[in-house]
Image (tube, rainbow, N blue to C red; front, side, top):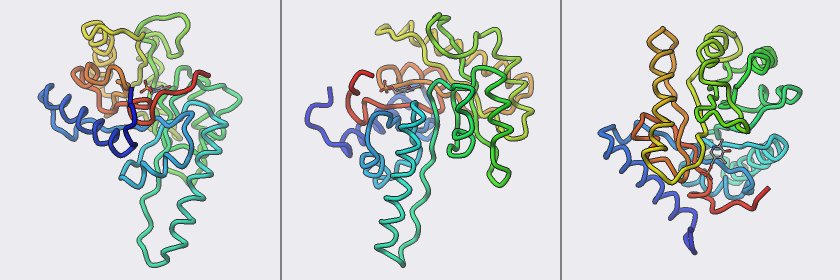
Length: 247
Ligand SMILES: *Cc1c(COP(=O)(O)O)cnc(C)c1O
């Protein structure tokens, strides 16, 4: 799909797509931010994209993510050591977007800035307890299974309001919004209908007084539909890094 294009070309094309989607939806060009989902791709490509100004990176597999965060930290330190007078580049922001096992929450609480995939109370409590005292609260989204697919992670739409209210009061967490991965579809009307469900839940909860600012929805193949329905953050992997080998 990406032919022989380079990462800088794909990044520029993606930013143009997001700008055009915002324009088509009558939204400001800066209403939607890009999360670069780097799972299965090496730290070198993360650092290449970071050098172009991308700060937020998403990962789905914990062991891979931890090794990559370490490698990126080392790469940044090395770059700085070569230029002692240079201003330190902004730190990267790491987002976990994958399924969470309850016995693997500690490294998430200690190493990530965001977790998008909170789907049950037990996970939220553990992350809150395990967030180190010296760090800012962990930014989180509640993941909702908007398509109702049995195989998909995320809480049921009907459970989302109660879970969001519980997350909102945990001291180690800061509830930022909702996330969904709808069933894949080539039909833009179907894509929009699924994203609309997440937006409606989001608006309902904000109407109840929950302070949230993030609708994490839209990926490489459906970001236009997501932006049309109010996405504030698109999570993009293959359109940036190329197609992934199947796990
Ligand atoms: C892999 C992944 C993405 C990126 O998907 P692409 O189709 O490659 O853009 C986004 N969100 C989540 C939760 C993912 O696991």
